[in-house]
Length: 479
Ligand code: AMP
Ligand code: ZN
Image (cartoon, helix red, strand yellow):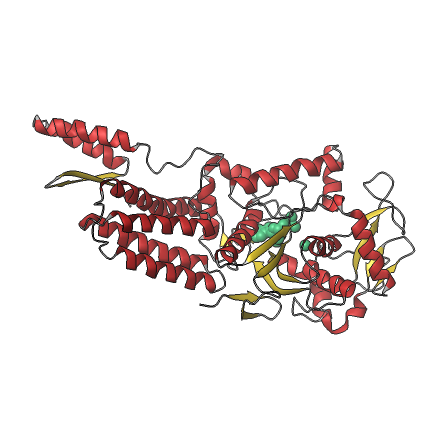
């Protein structure tokens, strides 16, 4: 089976072949930390976490880099509003972001560089661009990348003409009046004395937004990346700017072989964003839903699709995930009573086939929706096998190992770090259930049918189904 990915650069599905054997340098743009992160951010980082985990699963040696934009106009404006020191403010929200990612089981990157810790390297890169003639310094002391030098490369990632880009250039294109060409982007911006800034050959200032990613991807990864990722809104100008300045710095093309972009998480069909004010922070949502449910909600959609957020959708995700968790719990329970060397009752083949289906789906541009679909079918079949047959220990252990294997990639069965109360598979422990069954058996022996039925009903309410058979009562968690 061959892994294929959708490459924004070519707008095609391509076979994934890294630049150097099994080594994968993967860079994902990190957040601008001026507030708590919202669910849209979670969408991006959980999606790329799954992609990273799957590459590892497929035997790649992944070096994952994700930066922190800890100085930027937004940080400075917010600090002015709140009267805080901008560095203290961004440090606080960096901590909040890392905590959220940890709660959502997003693996920490191999490198998490911060802009403020890389100013000398950024100045060096800007100097390289000035020296090779692709950047210019204005009278005010701003430095811009000269896009007219990029010629044919304009629109390389957004697949638009310069005219189209000019027309559509939104708030993320710098609008300073001392640029030569409207699409030129800032590499270094003059900073007034009362704002955060650093000395440079062009005066006191701070980096433009795009240059940090060029510098950090080179320092912690390579001059040429295998995968560069981020949300769709970063395609232009951010990622295109990265291509222009990186390729100009190194003379190497392509800056990144594959460009992957996640779709938006929306509310009422509108992108969730701080600027629109239609956001829920990850922390707010965690008060209502377990981390595992949030992760499942995000993962049960293909990373390029749009996912519309509302509480009902999260509740539904929680129920769907619970069905899978219940099956895992049922297998564990069945295992405690399974014959040591019993027949596998078709379970081994079924597990193998499902694993193939899982890999096939994930190889298709990380199609998590289909991959989880395979898991639902598998779980239904496993439950049915367990209801009618008595599979042996080895096959049940194999099925459990398979769920763990899947979890290594999707991370959807982890929930222990949730800030909200764990959504219990069932409030009752196995011991509680066995105790209740014992009491019911005694009631039945005493022909106290009312009590026996009441216990059965109570268990049913808590998701435990009793099956009276010839050899006694068996129980399972409801699916
Ligand atoms: P920002 O801090 O705004 O630069 O965002 C950090 C990352 O989160 C970028 O890759 C964004 O594209 C992504 N992102 C922000 N909002 C959303 C959203 N509503 N849906 C999906 N991704 C988002
Ligand atoms: Zn970036």
